[in-house]
Image: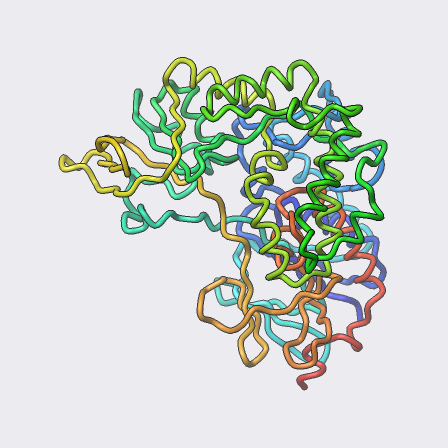
Length: 489
């Protein structure tokens, strides 16, 4: 009997996995479950050429090894690109879509049946002695021997201050798709809640149309800027010292700081980090200084980021979820500013909007939001200062990570509803474990779905590494030895 694979999630992570699966022996069918076209998820489904990927071509590839597969894809289609370039996100979507179609043709020619089910998945439950049943939102049930959860970030975080106003047409719960922002009336006053990557996208789209924009967040800080994000040719981190770190050590933060600063100094031939960054407190001033640093080739910290991301993921893979979350939370600001930095081009556009007065960035979320008395827009009250009128509010405060819960009968719920069951344990090889025996099942998690085991998941290079490792483990595992249904039968 051949393996019948079900992939839940058809974004970049799902395609990265799918592109490797047909090479594993014994697969009879592959079903992809996603309400959207395969390859065009939230991150790369946009069609606006203004919006750039914030990772360079070198690390934005479905193959983590060797020369970037994306580089070869774009060069083969006439795009004059370099490994350091930040390309429009729609090109990544096209890349994922075409790679999926190519691999699908190859799989079908090899006798593997491939189907895409345009629907959301709701639950996974034991089906028979050798597999699982995936229940879809439309009531259908798919059965398979193996399930791969590749769900992405598609549930926006809604700030409490606007939660009571959901459904109001003057409130956008997400930046994407940006077509809604492009339809706003001319000269609108828009409040963006958030100041990181999605908020930057919103500010760029609105700024191009000359709307008047206020960006508000708890920190009031914009991301740093970089000219590239590439894999290092020469490692800068002390690998032995890094992997000797313990989450229980009272000196962990001090040792992490020392190792990271040493790596940055090596990348900069001894130049200290303080000369590579700005300490200005005002957003426009800090952005201007960091743009000048990047433009003159002094932002050497950027050449350690890819190595640091991989090192963090490797080091913390064996930690408890609560421990990993607690440690990462202490570095939240640094992750948001430097690991999630924006391309210099985006920084220059933002600085232009800040300089001409069409964009303002302030610290602190509003205290009160209410519909305007005339029914047009919003009255927004701040902790200090007078209330302001806005025509539209955009939530850009991030996305909930995929949440899976286990019911007492063994069913895995994929909707993340609170109060339903318990959080499943994820093994070190990214498999959901049986609640009773602790043994790994044939349910695998990758990309954003693996956040309970992997620290930094919103990064295609992470998903590519996971896909390679998971397919190798999948090919070696046998259904009879690991099936949850077999143990419960």
